Image 1 (cartoon, rainbow, N blue to C red):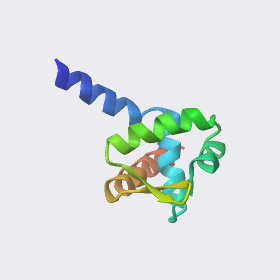
Image 2: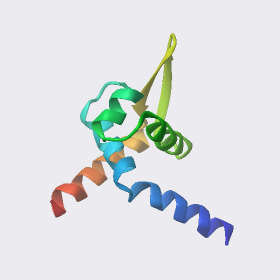
Image 3: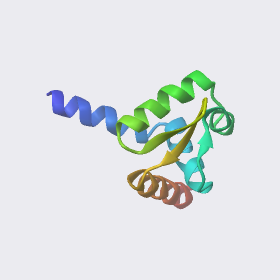
Image 4: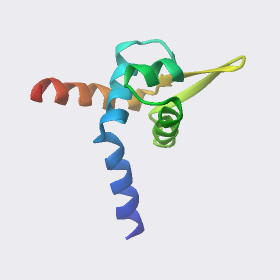
Length: 94
């Protein structure tokens, strides 16, 4: 039962609008991004963006790079692949 719940939670991350939009936004700009800018791009609060990004980090889809006091967000290779697939699905149904 626990394994199914964990799988369902991970599945839900990809099929909710904001996390999917964040992955696609990170993919479109190949360089690292600031969390506050990413939050504006997907139209959510900074605190909500941070929660989503922490979920994405725990799934191995993004990494945080610390530059002084600032954290930059980058997609991992796995994150790139998933973002590409989400973008493809979006184009097919859009």
